Amino acid sequence: MKKLITVVFLSVVLLAGFAFPVYGTSRDLKFNEAGQFKIVQFTDVHYVKGDPKSDGALECIREVLRFEKPDLVIFTGDVSCCAPALEGMRDVVEIVSQAGVPFYVCFGNHDREYDATNEQLYDMIRTLPSNLHPDRNGGPVPDIDLCVRNDDGSPAFVLYCIDSHSYKWDTDEYEWITGEQIDSYRTRSAHYTALNGGTPVPSLAFFHIPIPEYALAAGDQDADLVGTRMEKCYCPKHNSGFFSAMKECEDVRAVFVGHDHDNDYCVMWQGIMLAYGRFSGGGTTYGHLSNGARVILLNENGAMDTWVRLRDGRRLNPLRLDCAGTTGKFVQLD
Image (tube, rainbow, N blue to C red):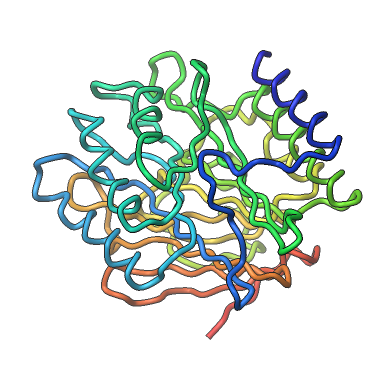
């Protein structure tokens, strides 16, 4: 409730005419001179400090950064998967930090399993240059939104970074995005819609564990699906309604998750693209796909291109989605 009140207060203040802050950094997230903004999503690094099997994961991050030169990096969970977790997390994210690329880390179900809590990991990350993590003020890990802005400062794209949690009550059943989080998302979405004259701002959502609609979409033979599907969707059994909220708010055009290492597909479901990142880890966990990352290229004209970049430089399955429209279709690119 405290977090919800804070969000409502922020929205009231901002609607009164103040600019929405870029959390955690003085660097603006803006399109380049070509009218583009590039995001790289790394997921499921499963780094184990001191294990040579993790070398391939660190090399993957370095190589993808070299190939793509992104404007932003978002990690979608399961980054450091062994004690000492704080040192392991630092080893991974410092590669991005030292490259001077703004970054944010969404946690997965495994990050907190070792000798550090998510809150401790979060606070350590905040000490590194180029991080986009706001002060949590002693509370739990927050959900945040980042804006890619037009030249006049207005939001062109909103990026919702959300905690999809871990396991329910110490069982092997996955938790879900909570009602409080969904209420907070609705408040922030309404704020951006109001700033945009009543028109929803095209938005993307990033988190670790897929929502149940991923399983529904992948099982629909009429749904457009491009990419690799080599395992079932390991989603929560309970559907908390986040997809329905996104539909009602009419702003989120695409969702990006990790968690399932042998999936990297994109599938359209009721007008929203549900996408997996590409497994970025090394040999410390299961996986049959060559490691890499998902790349998301935002354009000032409202188009979004996405593809998989492998560690060896190959590019796979480039797609384009018209985020400014409502066609609910993507097209494959050459």
